[in-house]
Image (cartoon, rainbow, N blue to C red):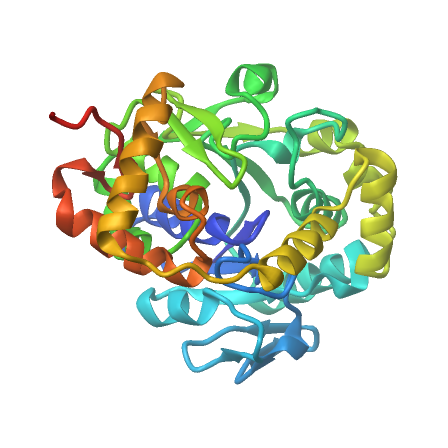
Length: 365
């Protein structure tokens, strides 16, 4: 038996797909996970998603679908978490190449379905912004989800749309999603996170990190991303709900607009028209700013002093947790220093590590 799980937004959605596979279908199941190679600039300094021509060592599965094995490498200066995921996990990670638009992604899906003849197909989105209209003021990254939804709706096979961790991506509040969520499929537990616990030690995904943290019992308010968005960690955090694909497409204006696109440039144009922006433009602007910024030295005493000031201000904002990505950016360090910062903080203050998050507490005098 082969199952196919489509990670709607790439990045951490692929990691969540591994946890979902183990939770729903058993530890021995090894689904094929179809995902974008689209990581934050902390990992990949090149804006936008990577395509097949951005890698060496890919394994061709069908004429337009390739798998990313452990031996694959992104071509510098690009980066990708997928080869390391393939090295540490038993699953096959197949690459969504979005450069032929929704028509191209639909073709990739059709080929993969014909090749695998999967017993089930799940489309997974962590957070729920796949259910967005496109004009919500808090929406930040609708493009990948909308493109995947548009492609999946064209496939002649039954696909189940699943939303894990409603609201955990900091884009649509969980209360705004309630009316669109259907059957409760699963509630993740601490045991479910064991399948990805080692990956969460290094993978930068904030939404999937919070998904695992809530499954382990974390509750409060977590500050995320460069903008410091507050995300509520509640009992709804570790849940997985089914949603109606047709209703999602009817609601998602960007998905409907891109359904016949044949290039990523077309998808971006529609995103600018409907949402007022393209998140790839945001990455382009941020990458240019990061390239111009002189890197700071990670000096332990100075970093800990900065951290205490950050934590004091965060406590005043009612924040109980944060991510190492957010701390890295809040302290003006660069993405290459995130892991060193993480090791420093865990070594100095292990009691504040609420894996994979950092718990903010009042420091003793």
